[in-house]
Length: 85
Image (cartoon, rainbow, N blue to C red; front, side, top):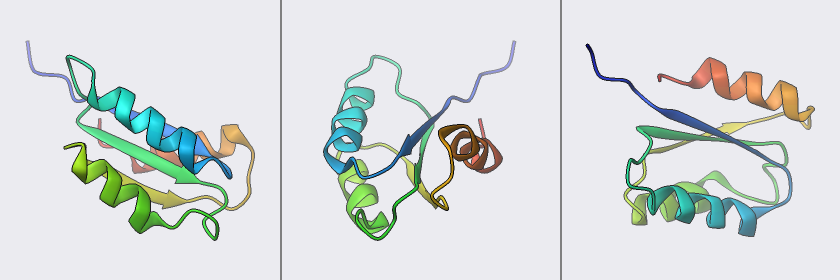
């Protein structure tokens, strides 16, 4: 049986503290995801560099995608298209 690749998609809008808490929680898991995709529906308030730098400190592979002030479902679809796992 082949190995499974795990992607976690986090859709956010004006909640940088909760995103950092979520990343810290993912980093504390026994089995870490292979990648975390953060879809930010308000990129002006929460720059991608802040999220990605924080994730790298936690040893998590994080990719940042800008949403377009879309619904949470549309944000998930943005993340799904970007996911590798």
